[in-house]
Amino acid sequence: MMKWILSSLQETADLGYYMGKQIDQRFLICLDGDLGAGKTTFSKALAKGFGVEDMVTSPTFTLLQEYQGRMPFYHFDVYRLGDEEAFLAQGFDEYWEEDALVVMEWAEMIREILPKDHMEMRFFQTEKEEERIVEVEAFGPVAEALIQQICTFFAAKGEDR
Ligand SMILES: Nc1ncnc2c1ncn2[C@@H]1O[C@H](COP(=O)(O)OP(=O)(O)OP(=O)(O)O)[C@@H](O)[C@H]1O
Ligand SMILES: [Mg+2]
Image 1 (cartoon, rainbow, N blue to C red):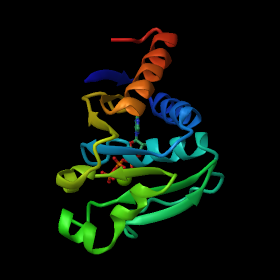
Image 2: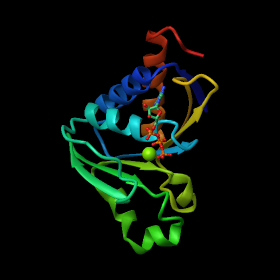
Image 3: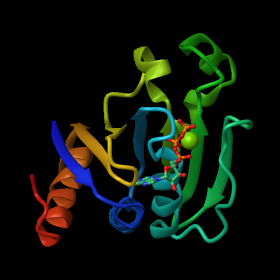
């Protein structure tokens, strides 16, 4: 598990955009952590880097929003869905079979059924208003490669911790 400081909103957006640029195959990114820590903010920047031009709203009340970037981009927020059973009842697991980038806020709510290959990112508040901590954990080779690129991103900023 890797851990970095995001010292500003801009840095969170830069990380998301950078990662969105790197991803060119089917992938799942799970976003968890504190309420209001930056999952949606990060998702929007990720979408932009992935080539989505029109990501406007948070999916909080819609569970799922579909976009088109270099591949389909699916933005989930499963906070209100609650559990694995409800998720499967909606057939949402089918989205993992597509050649698409799936981003899922509050994925820990369905942790029992997550596919083996994915990346877990947890965002936490700190006592500084615009500072966040992000913990990143890779599951599988695609995520391992991406985490290396994230290391490069932070090293370039001189903030590798
Ligand atoms: N370094 C930072 N990274 C991300 N967001 C930041 C940062 N600093 C301040 N913010 C602010 O924190 C808020 C994050 O809200 P956002 O909706 O992205 O969080 P969230 O984790 O998706 O919330 P929820 O748990 O409700 O889904 C925004 O208002 C954003 O401007
Ligand atoms: Mg959110």
